[in-house]
Image (tube, rainbow, N blue to C red):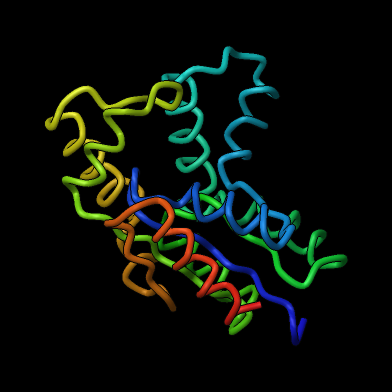
Length: 187
């Protein structure tokens, strides 16, 4: 495990996390484990329809039954499997402080966190434009989502403890340059 890395990309909704993961996978062919897959696996197991409400119900139920670190607990075996054949694995959608602590305990200094930051106004404008992925209708809905992510899923801890931060307040091209510059140093 000495030279292996597990790199988590964290940030608030609309900050650019997905863009980081896409760019890294495209440029470096790095595999990822999407923590949210745990929800979809459970939805499939329960044989219920995939929709926002059922996703929320399943997330809450999993966390109530297994604790706030459930997504890390269920993702660690997948990450370890990928590390058998890859030097780097991305962890996408790590949210809670408990997930962070589980990952840090499991992978130690080989666990690296990159926070992606964009101001609330920038993120709101981006989220309003999302067509397929749960667009945000108004400022109040946006604020409610932010507060829910911070208070309900303890999202602030992993962001605060990030080893690196990428500011995403400019053009997509500028953001992609920052991503590549950081990853060239990391891998």
